[in-house]
View 1 (spheres, protein in one colour):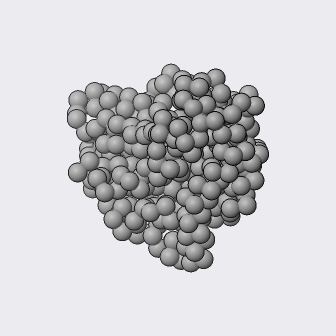
View 2: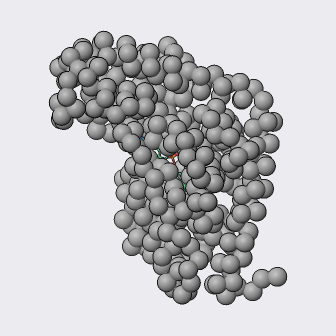
Length: 332
Ligand code: TYM
């Protein structure tokens, strides 16, 4: 069976983009693939994280996975630092990847901003660790949002260069799975910017653990334009905020924008926002409630991560042994 690896950083609240762009797809893929879903704490510390908050966030993301419907028995759920094979393989890959490749990574440029010299080396190396995450399991498929496409291409380049350099066929070239209208959910305050955990405005995103009042308030405050909603999808062109809200409405209802536009075309934004709020509360409310229930028993969450970590190590140990042998390291 083909194997999936994907991950989410435990840095603050999960938002609607993480859910619609990644996690909801993970739930659906668990029946057709062997799946490994990781809370990537090693990636999280590439930017400063308060240790107590990191622990809380790691448990919250784990609770969100389970609350969204990922079965921790059938799939592997663990936090990345529990399997040191990820970091060992990263070192080998650091010696395969080229500086020029990393210099092209747009996410590093965005995150490092103007203070590039002051960014951590970990932030620069982030995509190499991501390649190691995937390839330590010889994963064949990686479901992610649109913003991870470039990192996936790098993982493929590293796999290919390793195979070529050593004349082996050790790593498969992992395929991205980027699904649907919600692969890039935009900010509620600016339809041209991605919804993101790092946006300073809380009103820019809906969090998975927001209650109905917060959801309603954020949607009410969402930026719009003065025109009513168009009755054809083509009418959304050049109207990024409208396009985003319609996309969210379609994705939450598991429909295409073409299907919903007939229903909402001609409505004013305030009428449409009521419908959107109702749907968002109905879809996200039960997940938030289940997260709260699970978080009341942190020991159970820790058990899931510990069990997942052991199962993860069992999968990567033979791959690392193969890599060490290929590279020429003497081992026991
Ligand atoms: P992170 O935590 O930034 O994002 C987690 C997932 O959410 C998706 N996503 C979005 N999708 C749609 N619209 C948005 N506005 C939006 N914002 C985020 C991301 O594409 C991602 O799928 N580097 C990864 C974590 C990672 C990983 C891996 C993923 C580490 N190792 C190995 C796959 C395989 C990341 O972006 O995390």
